[in-house]
Amino acid sequence: MALSPSLISSNIKAATPSVNGVDWIKMCQALGLAIYKEIVNPISVNAQGITTGSGGVGTIPTGKMFFAPIPDMKGHLTANGVNGQTATEIAIGCISGTTVALNIGCEYYGTSLGVGIGGDIAKVVYANPVKMIQSIQSCCVAFGLNGVVSKQVAIGVGNGISSILLSGTGVGAVVGSGSPSFTTGTSKTFLR
Image 1: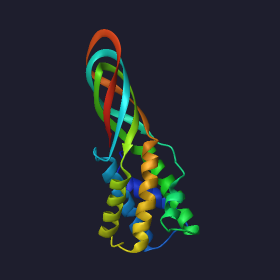
Image 2 (image 1 turned 180 degrees about the vertical axis):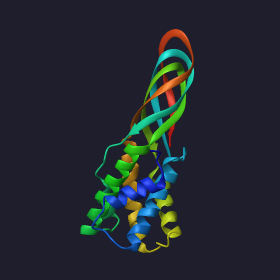
Image 3 (image 1 turned 90 degrees about the vertical axis):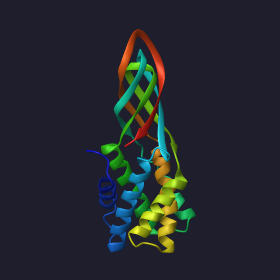
Image 4 (image 1 turned 135 degrees about the vertical axis):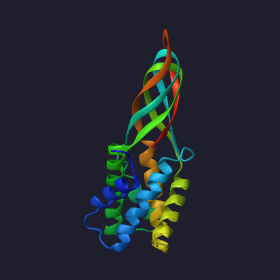
């Protein structure tokens, strides 16, 4: 299953069964769209890797990414004035839901320098929290959520999601033109 805004938002909602209401459904939809938009934006999130195999130049058409549920989102929410039981549930839901969605559907693609045919191991090296926060804030406004709390939640969740993204590692195959010599190289990759 490919990563999509609805996959992210439905997993966040499923991970928060006790948080209800129309505004929470809108928030889940806004979060799903915002997170997806930034994940697939090469300016916001990218990865680098190590390739091994036969020398040359190749591409990584599809690699699989895996993420860890980094637990610092509650601290980010508290630091921005979002407290209480609901804040804890939102943090747990966003951490669990986003991590599950990413582990189900997040792939990567890119280029390999030095290796034409072989394997790639990639690591997310850049996830811009400012772009993630801005994306969440703009999507919240688009869904009619433009209060103070939605801005506070956007800052807390945006920082937390960036931490989760930075935990990402992946494996993929390099395809292209190879030589008879075995070598190592590097890869520059992006998420989708």
